[in-house]
Image (cartoon, rainbow, N blue to C red; front, side, top):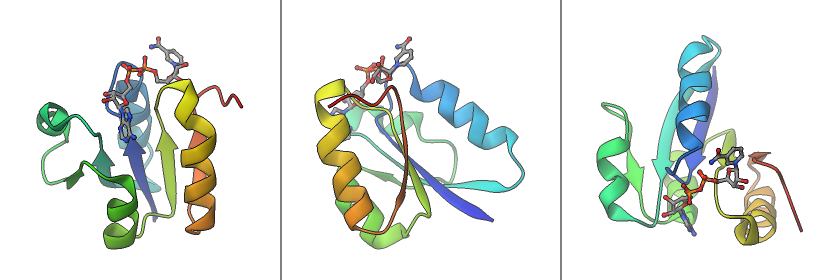
Length: 94
Ligand SMILES: NC(=O)c1ccc[n+]([C@@H]2O[C@H](COP(=O)([O-])OP(=O)(O)OC[C@H]3O[C@@H](n4cnc5c(N)ncnc54)[C@H](O)[C@@H]3O)[C@@H](O)[C@H]2O)c1
């Protein structure tokens, strides 16, 4: 079973959460958003973190979906790779 995490719970995250939920080979390990008001968007039983690095250290996902504003694509994707996490990035841009 692949353990996936979603970073950024804005507009497009619903598409990613639906895709993960519909794939029997993937389980949603955790979700993350710096906006704590997004906590209620975490599906039942799925841990929410405001800090993605802490999320990775504690939950050890295999892959993370980067659903963040463009300027964060590179630094967050690089950091995830350095932490040994596969990256699924929305429209990656430098
Ligand atoms: N909205 C669309 O229709 C659409 C379609 C295709 C692709 N995309 C892509 O998806 C990406 C995200 O777009 P969106 O529309 O969901 O944006 P959004 O602004 O709705 O959501 C971004 C979320 O990221 C959170 N965030 C910001 N910094 C963070 C950090 N350091 N750690 C954790 N969370 C953080 C914000 O609080 C927000 O909830 C963009 O790259 C965009 O190009 C969007």
